[in-house]
Image 1 (cartoon, rainbow, N blue to C red):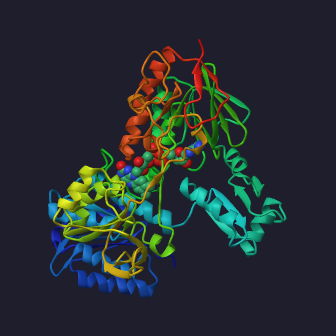
Image 2: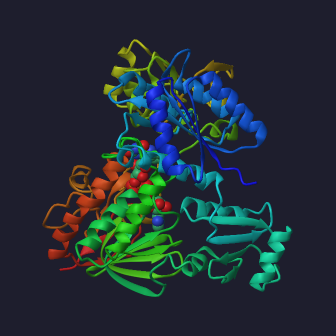
Image 3: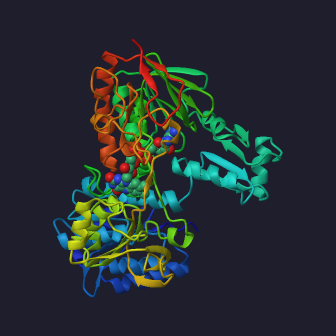
Length: 572
Ligand SMILES: Cc1cc2nc3c(=O)[nH]c(=O)nc-3n(C[C@H](O)[C@H](O)[C@H](O)COP(=O)(O)OP(=O)(O)OC[C@H]3O[C@@H](n4cnc5c(N)ncnc54)[C@H](O)[C@@H]3O)c2cc1C
């Protein structure tokens, strides 16, 4: 017999409980078994019974304030029994104390999101939120839609790479081991003998044997243009938030726009499960959702995309800017926008990395109430670490800054050093690095190594914010554009301040690089905000520079001499 997955609600307010029970049963009763309890004890008992009966629980909803146990504490107990269930906290409108719990719960992944009460009318305030919870659960645990099937060896680096690519791009897929019966049947149906694994089988039954990334994305129809020589008004390198914003504005303003992306739509933001500080989304939104919506928007406006291609060279030819791509394609553009972002350095120890998103964060952006009253740690010696410390110290009981070098002022601005040394609840540990992390479900302890004495010590903490460096992928343009010492692209007035060669009559536009007609936005830009909204803002605003430039394009001839400085000269 098919068992409907369960939606369980626990709330000690009888009236509210029955209203919610009725609303959910009316809408979801056909597909889900909706159950409710007035006490957390009865709910836990029921959840245990469901577990022994083999029932799947899709969603658990708990009121935050119940006698004897908070909703968050209840949800932690409940998810120990049904770890795959979505967890929602019921919070009264305007309840500030509960919203601190919500932030903390979401940050440590003890909670998936919250529902405000009262929520009537359900169509407006309840069903859309419940729909999101159920969609998340179904995506992860319900029946899977498989647009693509991979048949390969298990384990195999290439199969894993393919799976990760589909995962990052939100393409539903399934993997079948070539020596399984299902794998053999799929290969037979596709009419291939399996000698060239992995085999990728598309929805239209078309199959590709051990395809390259380019062949794959072209077959998927994701790339709108094929190799050779492509002309456009605006070529955008990178489909992260900065590149996508530029693409939306460029295409919507009638410019022939091409976006080149080597990995996945959404860039860094696409890897964030929940972005909580993006304007207009109070309960957060997933980076992948944002990226897919922006991609669709740019595409609808007419932007063309080339996936699985990396820009590997940039040069000027008269008033054209030429990009060479990894598959040999030449893009002849009137302007180029570089939106190649930055990759945050992450821990290499797997035992530390496994707590990513469960207490170990690579950013301290956002609401610092999640650390209210807690002892937390920040690793890093640069300005981002310094800013994280001052931001977190306003709320945390204590913040300990872990710095690998022996001086705090080696890489950090003086004003931050001053603020840090004056803060009563901040401690600095020099010569120290994180070498281990421990915890059951989320981070509980970190292991510190004193690099000078070799001494190791274990400290308790639920949060480590690691701001251990950002690396912009700009090697390929280092010979063409003026970069700062860390490889970030210098733009606009900063070019003149940093005495970059600029032999042109007008000053550089705000996002213009040392090569006129080539712009840079987002995280790869020197001095950028390193925030999602900042990248989106810069991508959108750069379009004004593009229009200004196109009124008076500058012709350049390539210079033969390669150096880490602009190598272009204006043509008279
Ligand atoms: C896990 C995580 C969580 C975050 N959470 C938040 C948050 O909550 N709030 C917030 O404000 N910010 C957050 N950020 C920061 C935010 O995501 C970035 O500031 C933002 O994504 C920067 O956008 P971008 O377009 O400049 O670059 P990126 O997002 O880095 O995108 C750059 C894109 O360019 C592509 N690319 C690079 N080089 C080439 C090349 N040569 N050819 C073709 N393509 C290329 C890359 O593959 C990538 O897709 C988070 C970052 C991370 C990593």
